[in-house]
Each structure stands twice: as structure tokens, then as C-alpha cells.
Image 1 (cartoon, rainbow, N blue to C red):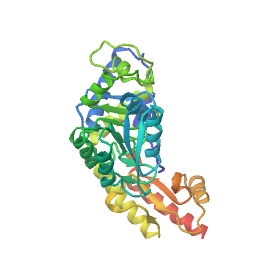
Image 2: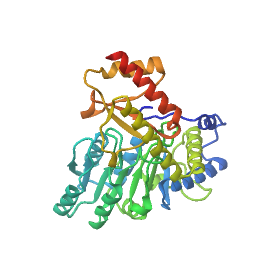
Image 3: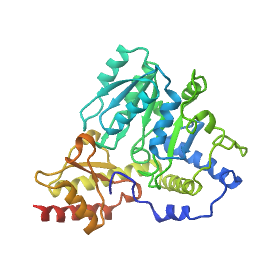
Image 4: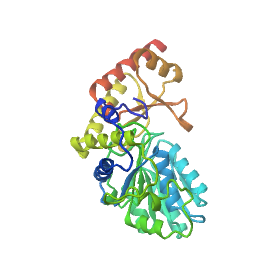
Length: 362
């Protein structure tokens, strides 16, 4: 029950054990097409350029930035946690100029500050932000941020690593231009795959770049030949075939449950977890109006040894929870309630274990 990777169901693990096909085998091409359709369902998009990148979520992030940001481009980056800072790194490594909107960790991005930055910089190309900030447990207002960007004729790049499958996400409805996620959070797949999606507007920008995409492996102009339409595919790389089996199976599980039902299950599980944590004297740090149900950030009580508690939980109760990152290191625990792990018995086990450990540590 940490911040990821989340528990993987036996059904998905079993899928990985199937015989390995060639990466251009007709049966694997068929699975690629079905996986793409399932990803379009999960993202709520009809974007033709929707696919799983053969690498972790960080590569999905880099794929979005290296394809859309060229030297000299201005990018507004909303930073209220660790993963916004990583966006800044990507902009700078692409040769772009990052205009950062910093907000207190644990708070949402200030929409007024973003609009002020857009008004002050009419030549901004992209607005980038994290939808579900894994380091702080905060949900940023994705729909409203996209509306601001569209008002100023900007592209959007959105981090949905922790949000996909866990909370409402509507790529087409919100007008998101480029989005990336990870397999190991609410999809409860094995780590190592990064779903991405690009709008037609974003594709046009990629196709009309002045410079080459700085990454050969992540160049969408090349990858689309492998993940394109029809049975005839151009060799680009050897896909992690068995991991793609797992990705397909996890998306199938999501569709069978129903996207909105999955969102509701995470919300319901969070409510039960939050109540239980409060009953044993623990405080959630994020305001309930923008708290992530799938990533619960808990304030460590005064006098309690962070590492000792997590170690005891792991060694005596077989329960993993996450430490704080960055500014939150040593101050909070991050309790994941994602995908397959979001169930009543896990919530009960987490509360009971924490109660026992905290009692023994005081």
C-alpha cells in the first residue's frame, strides 16, 4: 500500500506467463490494436496516436516533452511537488525555457497565477502540470488548467501517472494535447509501461518541427510506424511482449469493471481509510476538496520515528507504506489505495497494523 508499484492481481501475472510471441507476429499486432483501443477507453479519447511506450512512466513524460518542446520554446510548468520539478528538468534538457508557477506542497496550483503568467508571456507554447501529484496527494484542476491553456492558444502536457483509472480523467472532454501515465499505479499492472496519447493538434506540431526530436527511441514520427494502423508495421524496437500481455489484461480488467465504477471504488475506499486513520489519531494533510483517494498523505505524529514505523509494518505485518519525498521527507507517510489493492480487507489490515505499531512506539 505504498505510492506504487501497486499490488498486481494473479490474473495479470498469469497473463505474463503466456508464450512469448515475436514483436511483429500477426497475433501480437492484433493484441497491440486491442490494447490501443482499451487505452483510448481508459483515457476517454479518440486520439489516433494513443499507445503504450515500452518503458516506465518517466519515459512517457520524456516522450511528451521531447516531441513537443524545441530549443527556445517557452513552457509554463506548474510545480507543487516532486513531479512538477521533473517537468522543469525535461523542458530545460529540450532547450526550452521553463516559466515555473510554484505553489506550496500540499496545495493546488493557483489558477490565477497561471493566468497571470500566460498574460505576461503571450508567446508561451505549452502549459504543463501534474494531474495527481504523487508526492503530495494533491489533485490539480486539470479541466480548468486546460481551459486556461486553450484560451491562450497553448498546448497542454499532463502527468496522469497516478490518476489514470483512479479518478476522473477526460482527455477529449478537457482538450488535453499530450498525456502520459504509468502501468504500475491504479492500473495495477507490472512496472515498465507508459501509456501516452497525443491530440491531432499535438501531432501536427510534432510533424512540423524545425528540429529533429532529440530522442531517437521516443520520436513519435518513428514509433507511429510500429504502433500505427493495420497489420503492416515497420520495425522500430522489440517490444516487451510479456509486459504488453499484462498491460492488455489490466486494461481489460478496468473495462470489465467500468471506468466510472473504478473511480467510485477508489473514492469509497478512500473514505473508509480516512475514517479509520482519523479514529486512531492520524491526520491527513491534504484538504478533502482536492485530496487524491488513491494516494493518501498522512502527517507523522510528533515523536514518532518514520523509518522505524515503516520497517516494523513491513517486517511484522507484511505491509508497505511510502515515505515522504522532497520537502515532505520525514514528515509524512504516503499510503496507496490503488487498483487491485483498493479493497476493504487491505484497509482494515492497514488501520489495525498502524494502530498496533504506533501503540508500541509511544
